[in-house]
Length: 334
Image (cartoon, rainbow, N blue to C red; front, side, top):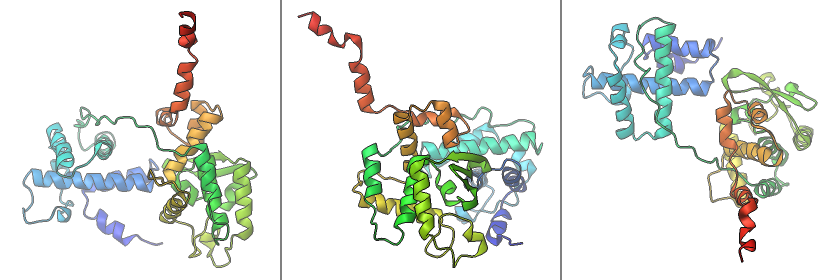
């Protein structure tokens, strides 16, 4: 068994209740590694702040060096709502956290305090019940138009040794709306005819249906995919890097940015997640996909998350106004 020594060392500097909470998220709730790391970071900042705020550490100690392993249940029971307000003010003014970052910190605090009140039974009253989440203004997601998407796929250099792999990656993003982690973890034996089974967010299994373009790009890539130098563990994954290993998220981010830039799209920052936005938008706009179906396709737990993809573009709004039967009223008043 391999042990993550760095993770063990980091956990040794956390309050015992936080370690229990992290283990609970991982083993019982099945939260993703990204979510767990985010919550761990936010709670670390929170408890370091409290030690400074309550004058429990030397002023000579750097913030990142403040030890937390000595925080016991008595300390936690004395945390009040006013302490939480002070922390939120600190991350906004001192650490310059934006709305999204502060909202995530509130989510981490609420989840942690719910755990220690309902599961660990450390506290009897949850101080986060009255803690409000910062209001996040809804923004239209950035996405590629249909013409831009076609241009992106046609702009790839066919002479490049990774052409078929990269083309397949972009095609799956644009057609299936996969998350970055989902794409990197596609296993060949999980593709059965037009059905792809993946492990999505929260370690939940879901089915992705592959259309003609997706199947064609996969089959073309498989004809040139060379796994002869891969070990047994890496061989099972569809997309391989030049190092003969499963392709990682950073490599995909870099290649997406490169191809988008080469296609002439430089006015906005496009990422793999923006390609997911694109797939959802195109399906909703051209495929008459209802909101519930789109929710299943994207693997969203809540339909409210899906609704950010159902924005209507300006041209649709223009046509909607023109369709008003009163739009021609001036003809009859002349």
